[in-house]
Image (cartoon, rainbow, N blue to C red):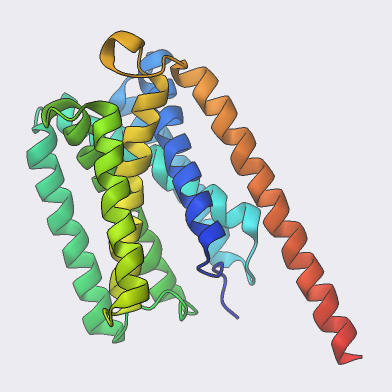
Length: 251
């Protein structure tokens, strides 16, 4: 039995919401609460490991648990990226290249050791661990790319979000009108939704003078957490309804 959700339009909505919340929550801890990037990374990586182990030992798909792990990879990825780019002084471009190379290495190892990068066949501990490792690195990479687009490219927060949204639209069009592998398109979209969430998060939190909406990390995090909670509740109820319907049909 697969422990992962179906890849639907609703999945991508929740993914964008979770990664945007990861950006705002990570900034809330490291900057607003002034915990610092190194300590924040340590705390959030610890939270990620706890949620990951819980997910790995789980025997079935649990929407709340799954999206909690996604959120923890997003928040950890935010502080990890900031630590690399700012505290270590690598810069957005160098940090992005390092993370991109690391992600390619993980996906290549997955492909050659398993024979497929399909996310519909994640049913063994080894593949599931590779899946979550790739997600953590892709979310960290997405943060660095989002910060690069917002701060260094000259596009600003809104411009960076528009660019990534346009690229995601091209991926969607390719899914419908080309024969490009759905697995490749999934991972391209998965990586792109993180910088989209990063730039969108910056757009929500940064002050007007910096091109943002000025909601702040606290206000934005509360709004995004509420939206994600509603989405998780909806998918949980939908899953239970599907299970009850299936049991009824088998009687």
